[in-house]
Image 1 (tube, one colour):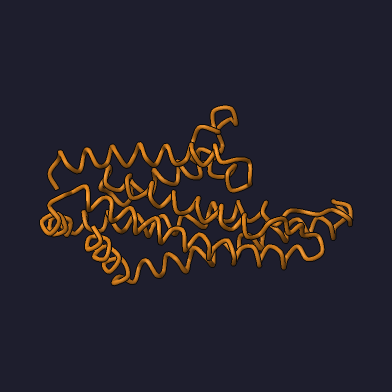
Image 2 (tube, helix red, strand yellow):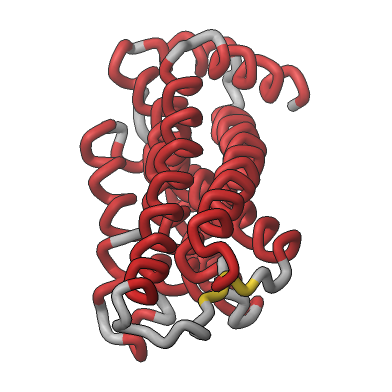
Length: 235
C-alpha cells in the first residue's frame, strides 16, 4: 500500500497542472476574501452601516474558500480523469492488480494535498480579509477556523476522487462537484443541511461536527460505489 501511495504522489507532482491549480486556489481565495471584506468596509465608509459595525473574518473567508476550493478539486479530479482520458489507467491497474488499492492510494493523496492546500487558502484568505476589514474585523479563533476549512477541502478532494472513478470524465466530474459543493447551497436550509454544499459551509462556520458527518457520509458512499464499479467493470 505504501508503494501505491508513493507512486500516486510522484505521478501527481510530475505534472504542471496541479501546481497551477493549487496556486490558483490560494490566489482566488485571497482575492475573493479581500473583495468581500472590502465590500463590508465600503458600506461603512458610505454610511450604509454604522461606524462601529464589525464582521467576523471567518464570514467572508468561508465564502471565498468555497469558491477557491474548486481549483483544488480540479487537481484531485485530474489524478483520476487524466489517466482515463489517456488510457494510462490500464498501466496503473496492471501494475497494481488490486484495484481497491489504486482507489485508496489516489484518495489518500488527494486528501493530504487537499488538507495542505485548504490550510494555505485559509491562511492567505484570513490575512487578506483581516487587512481589508482593518479595525472592523472580529478575529475569532483563526487556528480553529483555518483547520475546519482545511478539513472541508480535504474531504471535498476525497469526494472528487470517488466521483472521478464513477464518471471517468473530467467535464462530468467537475460539473458534478460544482453542483454538489456550490450549487446545492441555494436549496432550502431544511433540505440543504443534508447536502454537501450547506454541510460544508456550516461546519466551516463552526456550527457543529454533525455537518462534517453529512459531508463525510456523502464521500464514503461515493467511495464505496466507486470501489464496487472499479472492481467489476473494465478499465
